[in-house]
Image (cartoon, rainbow, N blue to C red):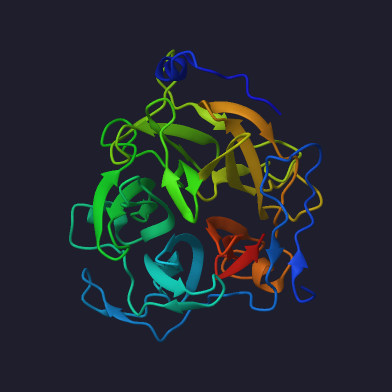
Length: 363
């Protein structure tokens, strides 16, 4: 499937130019040598993270002791730092407030959680957007100077908004506010920011294309934003009616018939920009082989010189719920991919299961 929607504003920006493991048998058809396939679920240890009532901290807003990950852990991002995998994951207490925790691993499989959340609603300028729903669904990359750039979703209990923060050590963070700004998109439902990046050894580095950084975002259709500095972003708009440009859409009759949403960062490879994306199966006009509303993941390929131009797309999912802990939980039938690292010469894919636990697959 190929995109034919190329806009004047984008053109102007670019110029002219093991036995105990389950092999994920991809249903992808055709020539998809560009896709990252062949992941194996590590069934011998999955799920690798579960909620716990033992971790507590004093919440700065309600001044109560919170069992901050008592209900669910889910939707992790990850990055390699100092020869270890640092996983930043969403955690929910029994009031359903979300905060971000940190777990560290020597082997990419076995993680040690930090006792307190590293990122949470606080007495700051973002409180109005982050309380009481919390902060959700992190995605993380590095900048050229080693700064960590975190996109996340703030949720005030009514509207989800895509936000951004930065850190030098993954523990102390500066919140930079709403990615879509304080203007006309301020109250637009937005989330899931996947920054276009390149692999440099075990590092994932945010990378400019034609002088700008790019980010895919959205959770029904996918849209684009661009930046000069990774902090301040502009929405890519159609020049005719000044609306957000949709670059990937749901497809009736497919596993992604209900919605599409970015997974981890978008990765520049030889064939183009590979975007792993999460998708939901609609109630009808869907993939009849999956239960309705199932979350599974596919992949899309965009032009390396024009992130708005869709070149190819997998016809089917490469990971889907087939384990009890993926099929039953806070939300049933969910594999939600959000973390991807290259570590010890392998790719590790981290994903939320049934919005309740966290699992890993390795390639």
